[in-house]
Image (cartoon, rainbow, N blue to C red; front, side, top):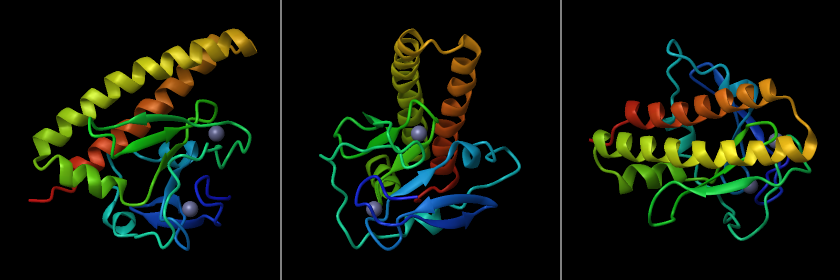
Length: 175
Ligand SMILES: [Zn+2]
Ligand SMILES: [Zn+2]
């Protein structure tokens, strides 16, 4: 797969028994595939340190329209995680994969110092993004005639992705 930000080649990395596609030779961004997200569960602790420490050698281009590395044609939706707009999470409405720029998780951790603050920010994001995601899926359903059950399935994968992110932050406290 190609990096949606710098077009570099994504390399598969393993963390806590889950594989993540990282733009290790380029911008340091990472892709969480739907199938990869489905492996996240209570039994698997995801070691974010491995990917968090990845510093990209190429700057991520935030202004560029990003197409999903999996679907290749689908433009990903971008939503700000924090009020300062320093962290923007890209999500593919079609395959429910998640893209994070290199260092974004570190930025979240430096912005929200305590585990409680990060938990709160994560919960706020889940609420905000959940509403947007469900609205986008409804529009998609109307325009493409997608079954209602497929929407629910995608919603579940999306929530898992966000929970994974929040849990990862919770399990990797700075203090
Ligand atoms: Zn890249
Ligand atoms: Zn996709």
